[in-house]
Image (cartoon, rainbow, N blue to C red; front, top):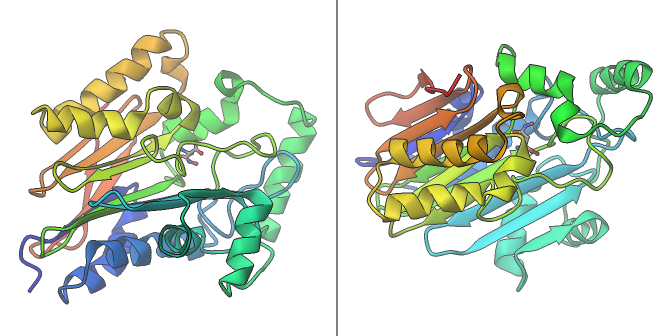
Length: 305
Ligand code: SD4
């Protein structure tokens, strides 16, 4: 029985990701297994240019992946700037379960993944490589300040292709919570740049007494405001998931009065009783909801602009 279980995730591709998570939840499986399964769907999707294999590379042509996973007991693991491994979310879970640490980065993360038996492969698809070459022609390898990364922000704002970070939150039939977040990060970022997604409290936070939150969009702004932690703490103080997401977005906009019109940040929250909230700076942020009554729910988040 999956009574009371629910999984939610960011963007249109959250729908198939939720379905994969639901196969675990529907048979009474646990939230942690569910989000790990679900997050792997966009990681495997080569048409998705911001998660896993097929993701757009950094400005030097390296596909570097960020991912984190967390459960309601505060157990968590993450990897950042990981190359050549198609499923960083699985490595993040191994960090959580097989090391005394929370976050492994770069070569160390890759070394650990190898030791854990993960297979190495080239994650730069011909399509992503072509897009990178096109970007190089116009940008001339110039490091662009976050607020000036116009192409990237345009793609985030429009929401037409909905290729973005997946953040997923689940509550299982036993009332346990878990969340996962995985991304190739900001396209054409500087080599070594790490976004919010693998930072516990920024791109993902879960507390079994309260609920969970995750984010998508310009990671620097989310890190600056400890975004997902903020959403969970606001819920702890009695705000609804919706109010909590709205307040977290408001904080970000307030600190960047000039930049906010040009950038996207979205938060998604799941309270432990299954209540959902979502809010974003720009229109176009969608999220998917799946439970025993409806598997393919897709909603448009309210937004500031
Ligand atoms: C980041 N939040 O690395 C991510 C970006 C994202 O590509 O949402 N999508 O800042």
